[in-house]
Length: 560
Image (cartoon, rainbow, N blue to C red; front, side, top):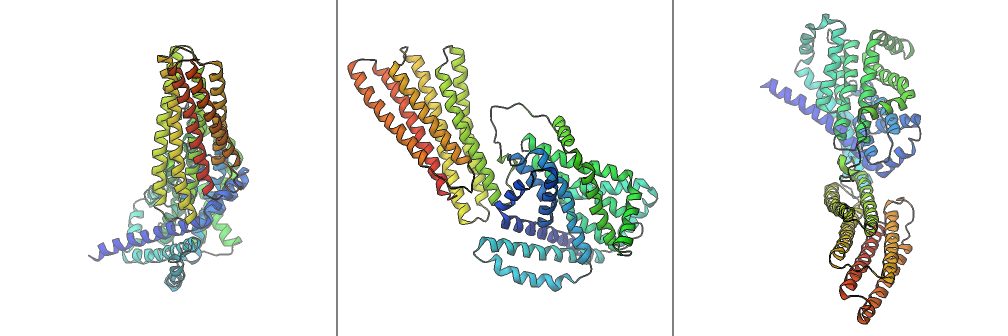
């Protein structure tokens, strides 16, 4: 019975450690919000700045997995190109070693409870406060306390289970395996990290075991586990990329290649590398036989070595992953472009990702209008039918996009949001509804042309054609300006005076066309049926102008 309780205590301690890390990471990301995205965008101008950015962000949020998943999402969203992503990923591998140094410095030497419990007292009022930023700081404090409480409980549970003796017994069977033992530990480290989905947790366990001075578990074995963790941690980004676009999958593959390649190279130099680390800690750091410092130094040196080794070959890595994962031909834009990779780690970043997708939906509506204009010039029945089916397909795409973006935004809204974020989501939900209506109207325009082609052989008069062309130009201006508003910079003042002028011109022309049409039909200039098709076409264009203005008005409510 005691054994079962101790095993559950060990698993619970690991769960508390992981929960603390997750809470601390999310608290920092929520506090940073859009600023984190802006930092990443601004600091990845070249590969070296990308590495520095990866180190900084990962050291702050204490999770290389979170950074790499974020990078994959940003590549999926088009914020970052593949070369920039590779640089950030390299830096993330170095940044994640900070966790090992913190644990080595205080994790097993200081009474964690002595300051963890007071930290909870400090964080509690912040979490229950009304200010979103303070809540995020409170979450970070709670996560920090939970992380080290979990670490303390993990150590206690390991001692209660006599883990040291168990590991020593298992090691006795492979102790004489030589270099094979090192390979085995690399594989074990990779597998455990894949299961736990957090290299920092696996590293904490490795440090704990190493601190027990278990016979047969020296620096070489612990270092091999640490190298395996670098391979295992790539699975998180790989999973995140499965539903993303090709560029995002390439970023995840680059992450995997970088880590696996680094492990292979260091394995070739393994024993000299370990000896060099021991010499550095003993003679340069003057830390004597501090084993934890030796392991942390190995972890850091390993990742820095890999980064220095490969930073000059970013272009070659990019070429390699592009050959392994070639870009598929465009499938008529039948899938989402940005939010297919799932929710990002914070609501603010997810909202920004959804905003990009709304911009794509708007761009497709603009494209549909051009398809309608092309449809009007097609004389051959086969060409007309093919173009008509293409417009019909785009209309279904806009329907699907509305459903998927709205569903995504509803998921985002389930998280903790600021008042501004709630307003932004509400506005985007109305925007996608209006854009779906634009798609419907484009199909109605195509259907009007198809019905006329079938039932009315008489061509539009010169005056009708001139008015239709003018109306299409006005409508095109309205859609183009709408698209510009949606995709414009978020931090710049928004002026929609031009959009109101577009709507005014469309309404004026619609009224003029209606009046002229009634007079022409009354005079017998053309048939009533031709006048109906003409009036339907003009009126549908006017509806598009209304929808475009509605979208712009919603965007203005966001208050950027």
